[in-house]
Length: 200
Image: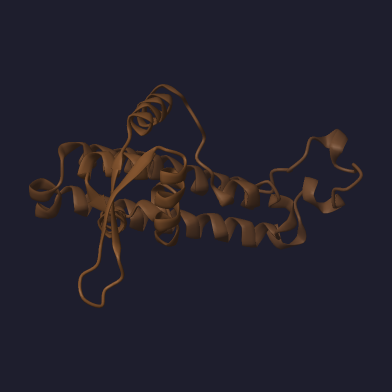
């Protein structure tokens, strides 16, 4: 959707300019759009009839640049995707969630320390976003809704920061990871359900 939307907004536009714009948005960090995949995505969207290559030009020894625009089919697809994300709810993919599901595999002291470290990283990120929100760069060069998006990210980070600190405290206190009836269950190390030696 990001690439379709940018081509729609900037058309007719070279792939280089689409890539530069996405990088200026840091879209590789929050929209799972990798810079190295942009040209491939443009070609694929063209093959699928969502984009149309309107010109290819070469200046001097530079590589040839293709100019794209959205087709009527691409416009319909963009509108469909846009509304599905506005009206739907999908959980963001976060590798930390996968790692946290194996909490018992870490010593308690390390798990608590890692959570507090994550809280510190989130705190630094929040401070950076707040500085951006108060900067002339944000006030004078960005649409107002970009600031609103920073506010959303900051609120999410604050919530997770508090959660990390709370769970670290619970781990340090020796809260069992498993209900009593599952402590000796097959496949679970016996020590994960109770205070491990490194938590004493």
